[in-house]
Length: 79
Image (cartoon, rainbow, N blue to C red; front, side):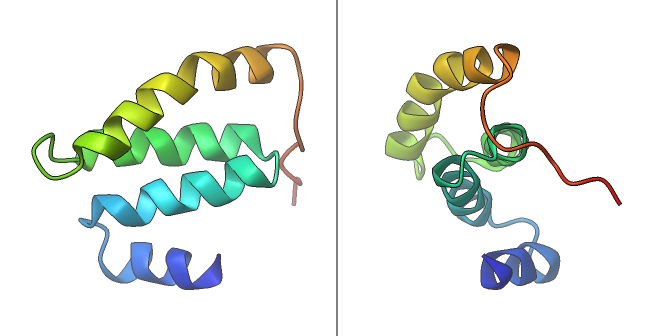
């Protein structure tokens, strides 16, 4: 994931970077971080270019929010 984070810092306008960051966090059960990255992706995504990814995110978000609400997943480390 460091490569994606580097790319996000260097080229924050690339929506797909945040999609892949979100997927990585989601797969690691880091649901809050995934939600934040999905949100950033959705704010930058071009509906004509990122249609499939937008559909995937829209399908995932309700379950993800429910998992966060129920306290599931790995919590952010403080510090």
